Length: 86
Image (cartoon, rainbow, N blue to C red; front, top):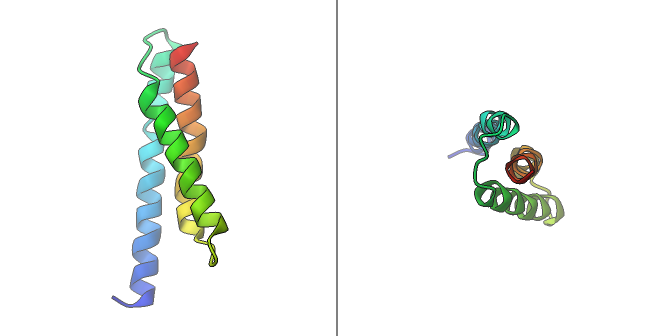
């Protein structure tokens, strides 16, 4: 696979990762409506995303698609976990 093709696949994967974390929004709304979900999965997802962002940002050649794909997971994972507790 050429470098251009790999870059395209990387950005498609980035988009799909972002969409995966955007899917937390209905759970957040349910949590706020009083139908509390489990906090463990989004909390672990947020921690996992933190580690991937650290990896992508601090490796020798920064991997911005990895960072971009995981920032929404940190934000929405934390919001989902917190709304399921409080």
